[in-house]
Length: 270
Ligand SMILES: C[S@@+](CC[C@H](N)C(=O)[O-])C[C@H]1O[C@@H](n2cnc3c(N)ncnc32)[C@H](O)[C@@H]1O
Image (cartoon, rainbow, N blue to C red):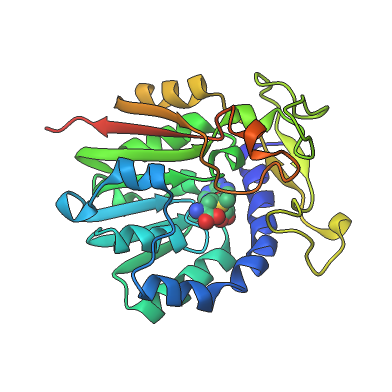
């Protein structure tokens, strides 16, 4: 299976999953209109006040745009979202139109992000379940680097790959029979969604699109970005969670391992 075929499968899968995001559009518009911000504490801490340094933020794999529009609420002068899902981009357009936000949205595979955006971003932002859908991380890193303006920052807030290897139903960390190998590079096909995230859709699981996921180790992510020309400024692992990945695990157990990480990198100025 080649990269673009897997990405197209994921496009169909996310077009289906967008149905759940569509249910929250009006609520999110009201939240954002009131100055709300969907970014989590580590993200806010890493990004700071965007008014001070960010004229243009580009959000890769922006889904329905709630985090993208939160970057605007945090002070970005202009926001741009890229996502492969037609349905997600439609939802993002609806939200920004309702809010009158200075936003542009591109329905595109992240690997084919339009070249007209090259060298223009003060911030490239992504994460929260983004990289596991990609099957060519070297090309992705080159896209991040080409989008950044000289001196621009890349911020990744992503699910920690250690969480990938544990059984999601477990009450304590135990290796998942299928995904329990941190170093596996195998793309895994799947249909349907976890109950704690998108859950059941109107069609049976076997009729849904086959999606392809894989996990990327911390070393793989950091090294491709360095090879693309970025410099590490700060890296942190966090107990913070952005979704209920382990619904049966008590906090006292779950808080003992990282669930997310932050990677802040810089493209050198001229
Ligand atoms: C879990 S979401 C990312 C987190 C997002 N901030 C949210 O609020 O849910 C994953 C997104 O990645 C997008 N995606 C998956 N593969 C992609 C690709 N190759 N290029 C661009 N977007 C992609 C999906 O359409 C989906 O909207």
